[in-house]
Amino acid sequence: MADQCDLCLLGLIILSSLLTGTSGVNETHVFISSGENVRLPCNNALSDCKSTHWIYSNRSTHSTVELIKGGIKNKVTERHERLSLGSDCSLNIKNITEEDSGLYTCQQWTGPKGQQQQGTDARVYLDVLHVSVSPSSSSSSSQTEISPGRFVTLSCQLYSYDEFSCDYWVRYEGLQLLWVNQAGVDLKTDSRYQISSDHCIITLTTTLLNEDDNREWRCQLTLRNQLQTSVRYTVKYSVVPSTTASTLTPTSLVIVIVVASFAVLLPALILWMICRKRDDNRRGTDDSEELIYDETYTEVTYTEDYSKNK
Image: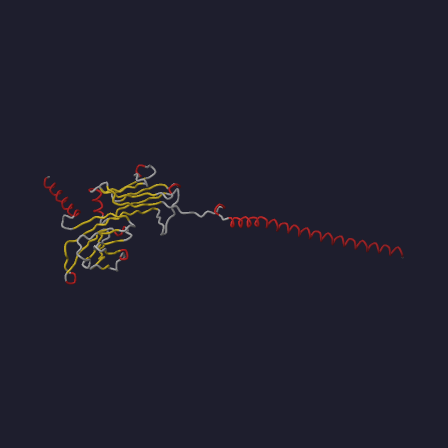
């Protein structure tokens, strides 16, 4: 039993040394929200940055990339446009995404052709807090319309170097994720929100109301009850163009009235013209019949008078 306790204690010491830097490696942990800019310190920098190398690695994606070599950016990397080297050899990254999470190692290489490393590695673990929405919604990309009466689910996740490091912070260092409103009140206290969490992921589900337009919800990350970073999500309803008269200008309103009146009067005018044409045709027919009758009558009278004279 004592041997098992000693083994557990040894494991905790090794784990602690890996995460606190007592193994001789300089380590820093940075928590940041997606969309923000971040500065990663290089705590082993020399007098200039010509010997500085920055290496990125992520155990979850199995990727390792050399970002900076001898103080010069590697332009082959996809993120090189968002990278810059500070005067103190720190690494600056603009517009952080969840894919930027991972381990950043700063090294100093000197000597002929830079083949001699000076000092120990300076490691920076970058943990990125990111919110995704279902149905998806963003102001710039293709999206499913957000409107009253619809369900919406917000998933807030902490992306780390690997799943084990995130799990460690939650279990042993007091890291906590929570959803709050604009006043900072935990939304778990409101029955209209369904909140569920699983270590490094916390989701919020609710049915949108009319008054939720422009409402803000925040996903907060706290460490030992101290706020580290937060991500904001603001509800934006799609604007439906109005066609009511109140939105029309006076000139356009007059045009609409004239067109509508003409549309009503035109059929009546056409019907009146048809009726008048029929009346004219009927009168013409009656006049021709009278003329034929009179001529016939005159002819008959003349014949009778001629017979009498004979």
